Structures are given as structure tokens and as C-alpha cells.
Length: 68
Image (cartoon, rainbow, N blue to C red; front, side):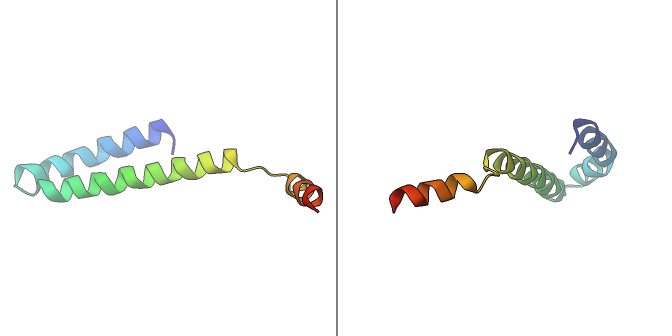
């Protein structure tokens, strides 16, 4: 998720979350923010795993051939 979209989402949801906080329902707003940041973290983790994963299966077959 781009930083601009994330910032825009947080700005749009700031008023309803503050409203909940004022009415002693801060746990709901905290839960919503926790879920939002959890999904962002999972998306970033998937991107990092894709970068580290080798795309060439030939490296694995070479190691198997050397063991035989």
C-alpha cells in the first residue's frame, strides 16, 4: 500500500475513531487500527519473502545432482 493511500485512509478514519474515543469506546478504535496495521505488516512481509525467494529452480537441481 502506498504511503499516500495509507495516510489518506488514516485521515478519513480519524474523525470516527476520535468520536468513539470521546464516548468511552476507545477499545474499538484501537482494535480497528490494530487490524489495519496488521494487514499492512503482512503485505510488507509477503513482499519481502518474494524478494528473497529465488526464481531459478536450476540451482536446486544442481545441488541434488552434486549429492548423487
